[in-house]
Image (cartoon, rainbow over all chains, first blue to last red; front, side, top):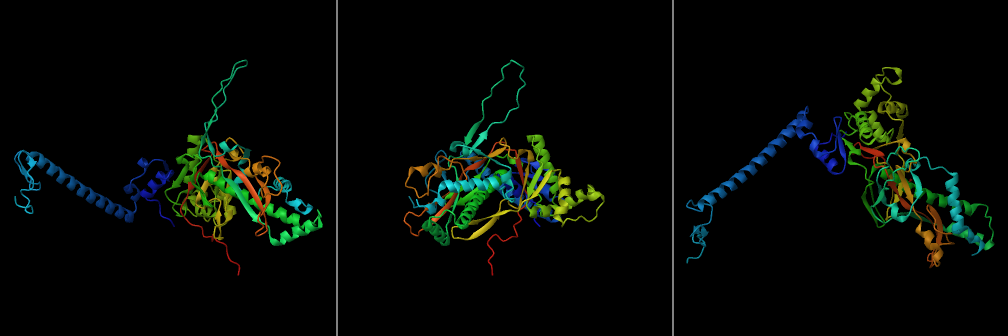
Length: 111
Length: 380
């Protein structure tokens, strides 16, 4: 016995040039398809799968958010540091905000 | 040409073709071929798709001029018209038989060779009809792919709207599927959106059986009080007995269980069979569109062999009287006589065309596989 289509499979049918009937409604566009949560309603096993999926998505989104925030923080610090606040992660600067070569690079030859 | 070989002349073979077409109805199993008419066509229009709608006629008062609208146009899909062609080598025994006819110069061979020849040509004709049937089914399903002997066609479409190629979210081999709702919803959709009254269903026995075993079908069948009683147990294993009930439940006039198969030989000689109608497909169509060239037709072109046969120096025995539409048959000889042989050929040139893209719809009711072996069963 074949299981009902997952949302991904429904999306595949529509992108392949077809339509999907689900619970008495003809879906011709991906936008109108039920969500994974809708499809899992009333099915404990599927609900657990969907919850795990949502948690994984949330974790992935959180990671992306942290990455973006960190980048934003660095950018803000760099803009502010053009005056007097040094960015510990930024390369050493000299003159009017321009890099002064490799003066602070411990591996650089002395000169 | 000596008298014995007269029997292989194109004119005689073509007479046999016409006779076979006249006296014999289409084989029972070629269901879709009875629905699509052959129409004469030229090459440029064969693979085209007609764009435009048939418009409702105006009411014109006496002595008034009627409006003239621009006609539809043809959209070219490709200009390479396929030939439907295959051949059969004459057996050595029959070559010897033919030789004795030729040696004796008799025209009456007590029917031995004539019967053999008619049988071979009949086989060729049937093979062409089988290929046409496969093309017709592909047109109803709106999908055709072919890759054999250097001819590649991939995902050929006749332009059926995507909302008429529907997949139920619960496959029919799941008892919680809703086949009755699926069919009724699609029928209602076709009626409201496209004005199509699909009153006929074609499906495989496998799909039909799965439909009968769903809880929804059985509940609806009971609600209809099938047989005039509140049956608690339905005779779902008796497919024929359930057919009228299924038609009533689905609101259709005709239900065909179509399991016919065709055989084809791979390049390595392996024979395999396949159903014309894939077992997971259910076709909705209207009986009123049968043989209606406003819905679809088979564009039947002039066979190129008939054009070149008169040029001379071909291996064809005899020549066509002029341009001829398929299906035609003829015989050729081997020019180097290595090995000496004669081949019968059958050929047609054409492709099915769909004029009203919504004239059929298709349900893909699952991914279940065919339990029937597709390769030849060896005799022990």
